[in-house]
Amino acid sequence: MTSNRKKIRVLIADDSKGRRAAFREAIRSSPFEIEFLEAEDGVEMVELFNANEPALVFADLETVHQSGVEAIGLIRERSGRAYLVVAAGQLADDHAVYLQSQRVDEILAKPVKPADLVKVMERFGRNQRSTINVLIADDSLTVREMLRNFCRSPAHDVAITEAADGVAALNLFTRADFDLVFLDVHMPGMDGTEVLGRIKEIDKRCKVVMLTSDTTEKTVRAAISRGADSYVVKPFSRDNIQKVMAKVL
Image (tube, rainbow, N blue to C red; front, side, top):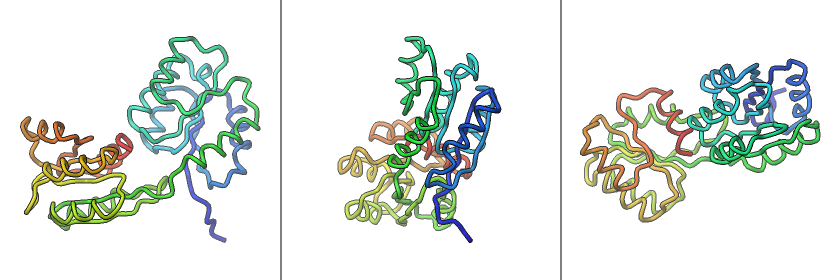
């Protein structure tokens, strides 16, 4: 029978095989269908995260050695959406401040009990958004089709709306709530930078990623000055799109 539970990837970083097994067992009964990834140190932790982009990360800072705190920073730099949980005993003040600056979601006091992990999974479940609403505005049907495919993610439900020009994009934006807009810089009727400015006037919280083959300083400055959250240079790959989504969302 096919499971209808939401599938997620969970990365466990701990140099003890036994503790990793205990982690797996403690959260196996969660309402998610879990694919487990395991790392023995901070370097492997970052490599696995970059290759798989799990939705949830458990890291024992002491057992992944000095690279643990740095690894958390590298993971957060790549993804603003991953739910980060660290376990620590004596946590130095400077490490605590750094982890807070990296928006670590939870810090668990050691020794970590199975009940602690069950509660983490409950809070993680409440934190998950059911749908990310994405608007793709580009006058190229090929580009829109590529983006539609590249935006798909096993960790999130993505609802996609498309527009073939700037005016249509703005009309759609005024009638619905969007979390993310991919916006071509050069479109007929109303160019992307003008649409960007109007979107930010309506909803500053919406993330806007500009699409362009023009990387001149003037174009980039115009986008940034109007509030663009990021930009992607054409031609782009799935990895480009997934990285920028992880960064801005």
